[in-house]
Image 1 (cartoon, rainbow, N blue to C red):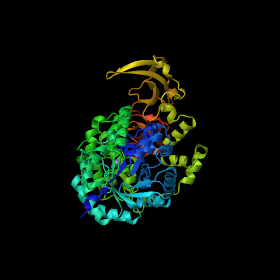
Image 2 (cartoon, rainbow, N blue to C red):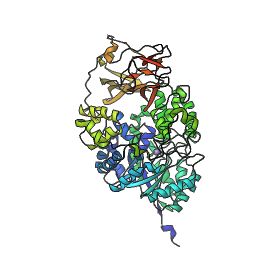
Image 3 (cartoon, rainbow, N blue to C red):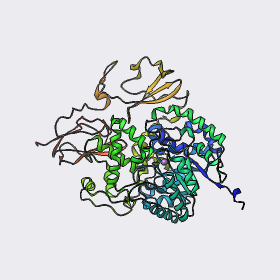
Image 4 (cartoon, protein in one colour):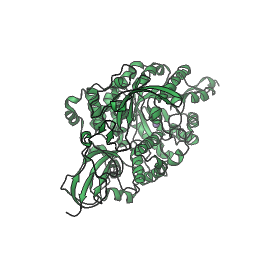
Length: 623
Ligand code: MN
């Protein structure tokens, strides 16, 4: 018996460039900070590098003013040898809603053309009607498909169900199967059982994805390895642990003591990569929340890492961070009422936002997001268990639950979107930006047209500062160059310029030790005066809104942006009618009138930032 020479190879996917910074740094890692180390990552020997998908697409445009497609091409230039992997939310692509089949097909085609090799395709509800188009398109374009089972714990989920899902994915032609434990709930012994069962029933390689949120992850991988898992996801230690993936160094070290296994990675290079990101991470400190460390409470709340840090930053924007614990307790209640969906994007955002609204407004389901309404109508697919009837009735009344594949209800979109964009789009990739995030993409394309690019915003030294064109100028803030002392360190600060106020505040472009940084400043008080005198409120494009006093004064429950106005002055409305749609916490929610009557006056325009207590629309019951 010479079995001891036959080592079992355990393959590793590195998530540092995607899930790790999505989980720890609110997805803010810039391409410019990835490129200097990309060659090294390419030499480490990973099975694949997950570097795109999930929230990176949205965040690139929204916060970094980067073209997400460009990131793939730039990285590919430095990393020709390691397969690129992306996370694709099935029919939701990298967005939060269902897109038409032609958008899904085009998106996958362009992702392959730009350099993505492996597509980890999942549906949040494990409703495989929602991944069918993406799987087919990937195979057609020569990509590899990793079909995904979203792991969760609930009274309706068990290994039988998961193995059944695995078999179906293999039948669909998937090259590998991923068990996606997005919340870090999978305990070591459960992993052993689940992977053992899967290995008995499916023949394609099994890839396990987990997070270290509960602190169990390295043990979970070890038991999964003993059960025969083929590939696992890790991050370099400086961007690992907590809500991120387990650290690769720790895991490899454990396996290296067992003669049975081999992990073919260059650990010296990995050590260099980790050192690099330890330094880089400091630049992103402002995006770290106190909820990214190991927290076994995840086993109670069952909330994925990204969701906890997102909820924290969103509640922070709403100045309601003190209600975090209540919101965390509300999440499992909403999830139960929604039929125990696995908490993964976009369902985790829908449930998280609804739970936050239920808490912040002081009344459950008083304010409903458009996404909650759509979910309860069946527009996201079939939940694992029945939806709570009382909640469904309260939200959608007698409307019927849709039984067919949700995307079958959608008309082709690409042609229409191409026409809409016209000259603003240079190519199909631009149209896809717009198809996925219309508002964010338009802002981005405009910035790009004006030449405001990532390089210019963020490259050290050589950056040009966007033009200052507002009514107020930075000179109010004299002196514009000074030293500050912070935690014992001295920084040289030079104010460069200021942009237009937008989502999250007004951007200031500030050199800190000659490094250009974009800093968002959100005013917490109504400032009507400045050093130089009174700023006319009219000049900022907003009329001054009265404080809400009467019953007919329609207000927003949370600060946000007006997306649509559904009424005009003189319209008759019934109590409960939607008069406005306001976007807050990345979700749209409906604002209703609480009384019947006639719309007397509208104080807002689409695109306005609004705050609670201001009258947005005045409804008069007397007329
Ligand atoms: Mn994940």
